[in-house]
Image 1 (tube, helix red, strand yellow):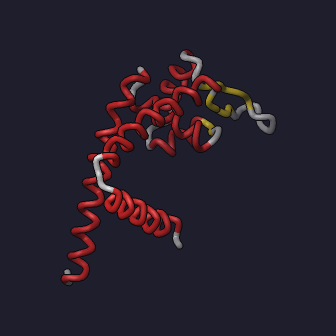
Image 2: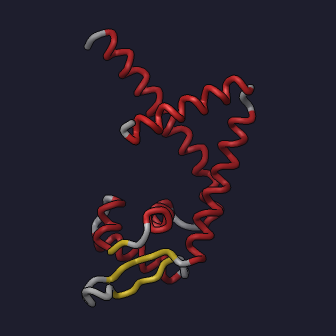
Length: 145
């Protein structure tokens, strides 16, 4: 590996580790929701990605369809998602978040954002500006700009 590639790999490794640590830090706010991480994740796909079939949701969450069926059943019992038959094919069931599910997920996101805000508040303005600039660059790279 060249020194150039090694430098990029080291930066990538640090960014990867930071992302994991940041997610673990903010995940503490998810315990207030009273749902397992798997249920929260599935609900998040529906709230932010729109309705899905069981198969689509299972694929997005990288679990089996039977596992997703159990997760969706639990979410439906809690009033967080609803099932409806497709108008085009009665065999197809579409799953979507309810208003209650959306509110729960948005409240969780708000709690996680508060934790990140507190982390950023500990930085001086120059460092916060650096973080904003880095985010602009990384978001652009991810979008393919």
